Image (cartoon, rainbow, N blue to C red; front, top):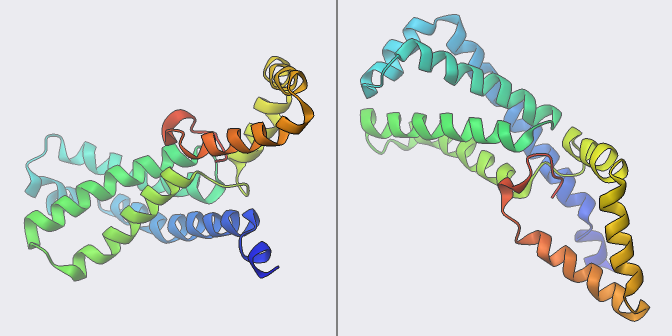
Length: 186
C-alpha cells in the first residue's frame, strides 16, 4: 500500500511543477538585471569571451532568461524555454571557468540552473502545464485520424493482449527522444 502512495504519477508531476516554477521564478530576475544596464553586462561578461556583437548577445541572453523563465512558469513551450536557459547557462559556466577557474562559489548557482534546465528537457513539462492541456485538448481530442487509428489497432487485438499492448506502448514512450515534441506531456 505504501508503495502505491509513493509511486503515484501525481507526485512526479507535482515535483516537475515545483522544479519548473521555482527555476523560472528565481531565474527571471537575472534577465531583468541584464536589461537594466545592458552595456555593463556586455563589458563584464560577453567581451572577455571575445564573442562578436556583445550587446546583441547580451540582449539574447536576457531574452532567453526572461522568456525561458515565463515558459517554465506557465508550462507553455516548456522544453523550448528550458533549452534557451540551458544555452545561456552553458555560456555562463564557460565564462566563469575562463575568467575565474573552478570557483565553486561562482559555479554553484549556474550549475543548479543548468541541471534544472536539463531535467526539465528530459522529463517534459508534466501534467500540470499548459503544454499538457494543449496536447490533450487540441492534439489528442481534436485529431480524429490519430484517435481512430489507435482505437482500430486496439480493437483488432485479443482482449487479453490489450493490457500488454498498453503497457508496452507506455514503455516505448520512456525511450522517446526528448525533442520529438516540444508540446508533449511526457
